[in-house]
Amino acid sequence: MENLSVKIRKFKRIFAVIMAVLTMASMFTATVTAGGAGGAGGNQQASGGGDTGENAFDSLMDFVVSWFFRIGAAVALFGGFQIVLSLKSSDSTQQENGLKTLAAGAGAMALAGASMAIFGIGSLTGGF
Image (cartoon, rainbow, N blue to C red; front, top):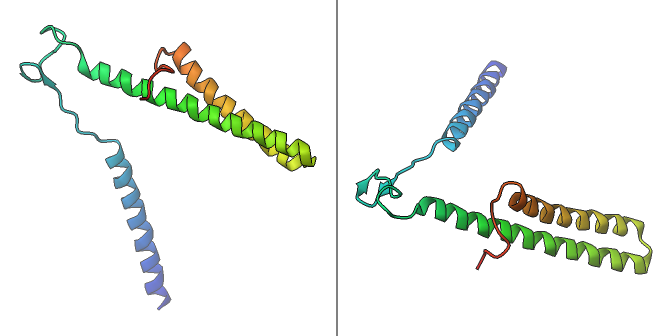
């Protein structure tokens, strides 16, 4: 009986590896279609139209960066509240957690600002 359980365990392990490889392979595949103004595959810039794909990407990045900045600001504000409340009770663990939360929010805000300044993507006005 032990021999059968060893074979089953080995089969399960091989099956798990195969499924993991197939999952990873499916994650790196994508279906991409491009349609131009005059039919399939046309270049819209050459035909006088705007590049709608680039505009859509820019508006999506504006949305993501602006909300990332806003969420970082909310987290930093919550960290500030934690620090203020911990000063009242003199709890050093709560003060440490407040500082960590404040730093995490400031870091998120800094990443959003860096993406705008360094890479030129996103804006703080997008999102609605």
